[in-house]
Image (tube, rainbow, N blue to C red; front, top):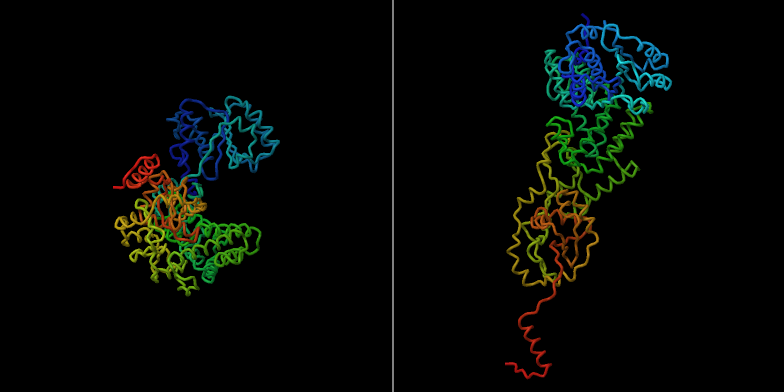
Length: 605
């Protein structure tokens, strides 16, 4: 017996076997149970999602002699005859090759006759959007009022090309892309029946490559089985012609370290292994997309389809890149991918793109300029916040990820930073010098152990080291010990009366998003005032005052203010100034003065 490919061998025979289209199969089963068979159906969706499969199941179900809960029994004469092709009342045609008016006229002539053996004459027209305009016009009248024994099932991947007059006469079902979880489950089921070992990572990788198409996933599994009956991720990449995942991480690390030599060496190695340069460019762009989701989405694990090991490596990699850097990389790779379609040397286009990523100054686009300015601002802010003189840093080791200035800042002992005034105690008087807190240390944003190689981002522990955690480990001064001195040396009402509106406060709140979206949201719709060296924040949100009381969050706010203004302010709450109250002696003196002015003789004793 001739070998049958897997996607045909395991094509679903009932609606229960269809994966990922419950919204379609459940509706069709309900209609069949109620004997509500429509005369025209339209199945639309991307390739490999089950349109033709559901059309064949529906054609059997409407003709089944023993329908079971909306599913064809598969055992009666009609079901067996339709499966074997003996019953000619079910006609399947491809509109891509039968798109003319003569093909449609042949259907119109046939529908006048009753079915020979089945209950309904069913016409399944695949890729129906390929029909010519004359063919649509010829089909329109028959589709609107067909004989009672005729059912049309139209399938298309481009529903936008279907005339509105046809759409209004069909019951439409939209097929969704099948989720990676459903595809992976189906692949494991097929592998078990074929006595093939399939790892979870390999099944997930096949699902990602298939991009929601079950047929493509099963076909790729078929190719993998031809290579080895023990299918793992390496076998899948070999069958699909993809670069190893480690190569993608290594190329991205080269763009971080500006190591263009190593990046081009990797491309040369993959080219010699006959890897498609267009596919490699698309994979790199997809990898940067995953980094973009990690940087912007609150729960990226639900959207980034990777193994846990690869996801941890991607998180570590995303820590070294800013969002403008990632968007710039995606833009460069996208332009390279578009140029490859017309270029005689796709490899050259990819190499040019990698050179631009490793040396952004060669790219003159606005995106490249924005990425360079962002990188410079970040490095300068880091130097200033850590008290490091702005000088040319020594050349970092080739394997260290960027930015190298962060690790140099960690080795030096920065000057102590002044403790920010918390929200609840009163601020210090302007004229009183504030002594630095020796135990409060500036913490680098992303420290990284020097022994971690850039070529192995999977083991990089950068994501485990957080600035807030390190700040909390350093003992800080307790503000309540200084409170008595502050109350003695400052006039709070005078401080509030001298306060002027701080016009750059909206920019500071926007800048806070780079540190914490939660902190930024807490200070939305607030106002700020400047009085000498103090930045006073006016808000009705209790959470904002709670954040001001915590040293770690207060430090983030002070950094955001410094980056916008270039000046370190002391933070505190703002209150509307109250009228100055008189002491008891002052009240008595005023009373005596009034009596004397009224002519009353008052003695001082």
